[in-house]
Image (tube, helix red, strand yellow):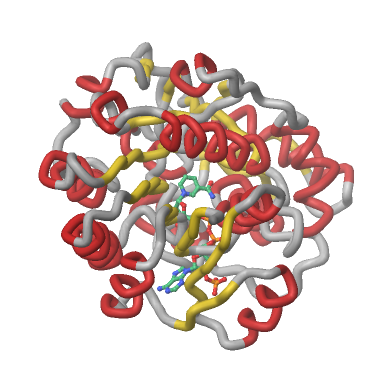
Length: 341
Ligand SMILES: NC(=O)c1ccc[n+]([C@@H]2O[C@H](COP(=O)([O-])OP(=O)(O)OC[C@H]3O[C@@H](n4cnc5c(N)ncnc54)[C@H](OP(=O)(O)O)[C@@H]3O)[C@@H](O)[C@H]2O)c1
């Protein structure tokens, strides 16, 4: 019988994962908060359960019926993670095994450079102690810690992993959804008439195309399916980056070049964004989300045979993402969801 999958957050990241799951033999159920999404998923052969991340009983019940869980809705919602863990615990009591892969984000390893320098610190997913040494106050860390701690308690029944993506770029296949950080900087630039950066724009993040990330998720899933629990339990952390690091200043300059060519802004050279405008980015999180260093190496996925295949960030911005952003209507007032990356 095909394994049953429950995926929370069928958006930009989760939607790509669902598409890949459907190309192989999985029964997929997803959590949707919009009634209108139910029929769309039914057409794909995906069962949609209506609920929000705060509907603990809906989540727990669905997890209890599922062999594999993905949580890609947000890296910042502890109650939904606790509901998943409750469901995994219930399955354990019934003698059932579960795989749970959680989507975190590289803000976890970000610093406070705010664009002023490129850091020498590079996190390596083969060195979990680097991540385990982070303060509990690091972005996403309290949520990730719930999983890290539950791993020991549920060790006999569950394999759990935490994916930590960097800047994700690209357009997702079915819904033309865009990512978070670079689209927000592009929308800011259109609104304010210049390419903006935090501080001097010198800090760097790694990059990954959303389709390469989704393939990374599949490689991770198949490894977890075929690897003994004890081996999986040794290290929960996986990065997923394509080998390219870009400074926020480089990104701002490229956004400026594309928008100037499109006649949307007068000058392409980036300017520092004043703090009073952070409301048009990510509020008080702006310095971290689009101004920090978050350097990391996806050594583990590469050793499992994964390799990035998609076009690089700037080609994607010019050919795929900014053309969509240029069609957007309505006033832009900063990234609207809970800030997380
Ligand atoms: N994109 C990145 O660059 C990036 C990088 C690192 C980490 N992350 C983390 O990954 C998360 C997801 O990113 P994404 O780009 O895939 O975002 P997205 O496109 O907004 O997808 C989020 C999905 O979760 C659903 N969702 C959100 N809140 C919900 C709630 N309260 N109840 C039920 N469903 C809910 C959304 O439903 P709707 O379809 O109704 O909107 C959507 O399907 C981010 O929030 C962040 O924490 C993202």
